[in-house]
Image 1 (tube, rainbow, N blue to C red):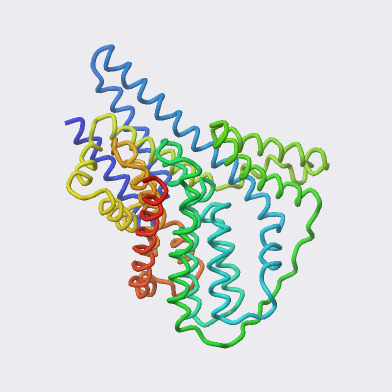
Image 2 (tube, rainbow, N blue to C red; image 1 turned 90 degrees about the horizontal axis):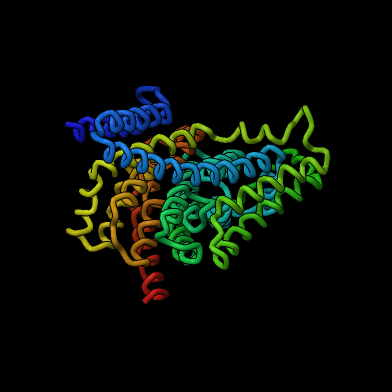
Length: 417
């Protein structure tokens, strides 16, 4: 009876995520309520001292995992929030873009920019910045939707290769399934898949030249430049310190965040009108609360051994096929709970298969416009980008995703066998 109640609550939470736009209840509220109440029910139903202590240990382990993820994301998102508010990201875009460019060349430039930028920033920020650029070009609705499709796939693809880019990648890394070096091997296959999509979409591009209208860019101050360099050094330092000394990324990023605060104070930037600590408050706390709720729900499901059924898929299908299928599934089910469930299920795979899973759950959501945060953000910004309009590009997206999975698996086999 206990299992039925807890699984039913998890299904309610999942429906709350899927139907968020219909029921008008933020998914963070739904998942957090279900996650906390599930653990309370588990505590109440635990029998005996041994059973009670087992639940306490499980909750402690679950909270520790969540805290590591939370603190890392908080540090990274605070950096991006500051740089975005100060106009550093906007200025960087205008440095890269020429005044005039052909539609076909712009398509490749947008694809590469989205890929690189999303590996450094979160997917939502990368999509917002990229869509602002596309909308400023005042293209026709059809062309805008085409560019938006490319943005969604490129943003999701760029995020899988670094732990700063996609939360599912960070989750797989923190679970010890892949190392930072393993993730770097994803860059070439993921970028190749993006280029395949860009080539396919550019086949119908016109030869007309597009004028890039430049808004009034903000002044680049010394302190902003120094904090931007600190952010890049934090990313590089995280990679190197983890490779050579196995230092957890959360520790390196918190160190970088503390340096950001000290730099602002040294340059007298930490003033009452614009205190540096305020940038922590403007990050996407709804996203963090959603992750908290999801991981608490998955922790309960692991404790009652419900996740064992997911392993059965890997007994029926080869690991590559099962991982490919999970990517397709992530287009309909939020990839965060899906990834959390797979990691908690105790699946035993070789390194190449874990690389494929990392890629598939990170990019598979691109197949449907509602399958990823990038798609939902793009849909909210582009008039006419509906489910039906986006799905017209499904064959090209599926082709690119499939080739990406094959390329990742091939890379893994080449490197690790």
